Image (tube, rainbow, N blue to C red):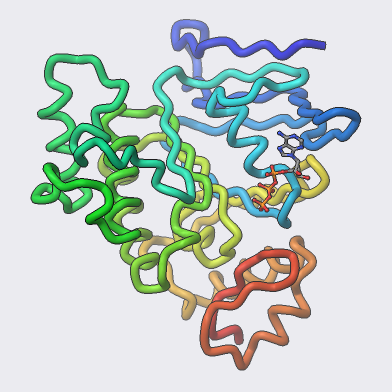
Length: 272
Ligand SMILES: Nc1ncnc2c1ncn2[C@@H]1O[C@H](COP(=O)(O)OP(=O)(O)OP(=O)(O)O)[C@@H](O)[C@H]1O
């Protein structure tokens, strides 16, 4: 079976808002291995979804199919054409100034103005002329966010964009992503290993295991969310259970900082 990727056509969905993303029976195989197995998924316009799962369960594979970087092996994908991806590494071109990195692939006459505006939104207006090598890790990721933003995406795909950052920078990036999402309201799929990050940011958390979703959890906690909210802690416990990490969570009670378990899942500080 071949995969059908078709562009999203709003006029086909008159009665209720069409989903930003729709997957029906999507498969991905590498050789004889099935990595994504008959997956169904809908993401509503403006919905913030986090995707958790053990290392190697297929999160990036799914994201790359949604980004159009890899074809599905079968099933139907419907995604908006206006989409952008931010990866764990910033992927800036070192020989292009910051603003030129942001406008890469943008061919409109006002590309520079839009780049400057996007850089201002991520707090880097004054670094527009800088070379990427002069940026800190957090600044480079903010440029990567500006580069996504300038495309005015209906779907923003984030593949562990904060994983390589220090804890303080990561917290700042959470606030930034939250405010950019509130201002622009793209649908977001955030791939993360960080259960607390997912709980802080997402409307909904999916857990992938063996190529299938084993949990689809709506998060209704009002924002801003912190780990001292009882519901936050209850959901964390439930998510860690789905991830097979309940014992790790209990064992982490005395931990004072983030740590990573053998499955590659980052467990947040201050378990209770
Ligand atoms: N191009 C490829 N060819 C063959 N196998 C691949 C390819 N890309 C990914 N895989 C395999 O597919 C599986 C899922 O990989 P993927 O990167 O999607 O996992 P992940 O859940 O994102 O992992 P992590 O959390 O460690 O980043 C892995 O076993 C990986 O080795």
